[in-house]
Amino acid sequence: MLILRANDIQQIYTMRDAIEADKQALKSYTEGQSDVPLRNHFRSQHGQTLIMPAHIKDLDICGLKVVSIFPANPQLGKPAVPAQVFILEPQTGEVCAMIDGTYLTQLRTGAVQGAATELLAKKECDNAVLIGTGGQAASQLEAMLTVRKLKNVAIYGLNKAKAQQFIYDMNHRFAHFGANMYYSQNLDADIAKADIITTVTTSHQATFNGALVQAGTHINGIGSYTPEMHEIPENIVKQASLKVLDTKEGVFSEAGDIIDPIQANLVKPEEFIELGELVLNRQYGRQNDQQITLFKSVGTAILDVYVGYDIYCKAKAMNIGINI
Image 1 (cartoon, rainbow, N blue to C red):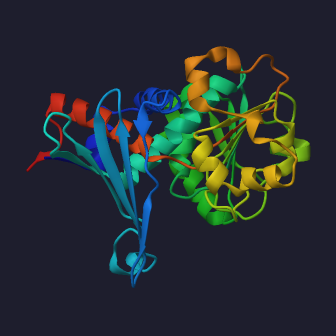
Image 2: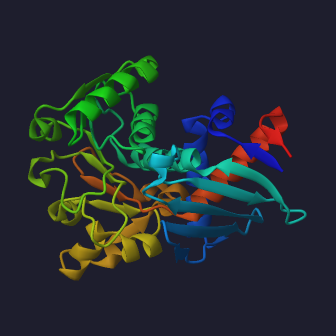
């Protein structure tokens, strides 16, 4: 079995690699070439654990992610949300890889937004807004910078000091992209001129004023993943010309951003398509630079398994990781 840590992955696997893998994963999902059972959820004395399996039928790849939420872990010097992804060898059924699931989740989540932005945003985008500076924010920023040559990225977080430290770190980490990254002192003004808006928070209310969004803007809702959470303004869900989801099954059951507008009869379920449909047929995509487009993701184990297997193959070929 090959053990792959975050730094092992970073040596061999790029955001561009992950974007392409995510596209293929969701294409397989939309084509019915995957089996993603409902995740099992266990509560224990100190936290909760989710077990998320998936099988990619056309490639015969099986795997699962084990992710736990243990709030007191930082007091023990451990991550609050530890995760591991296990990949099975297609020929033997043996566990062939154990991959750092925390980093892999960040990577594939950034990448799925990157895939959506690449397929839905205008070709020429100068200004972006990133709302949220938590654990998923860096990969979201990297994905936007990877698929569009941005000039300015306004970054906003409720904790200004934390956001400014994040911006300082990102300006060093992603200096090669050449974008001006700054703290948004006036979020409304930055929203009004944004070509891309990505929100990655667990907010229970809209994180920006939808009335200020200009024609042609692409919006990504990445953070909220329960019926109680609402990052995206309802008027944007209604107004968007293209409403795209990572998976209908996941979003329609978990994302309050989308569930509530449907229940309020502001939109109908048939107005939404899956990102895999865009990968299969680009004609479903943006038709002009005036359309507002929306992508909503709650995540799916198919992304973890597909990207995880791709990483495993590259690591094995390059002799990266720890063999046990």
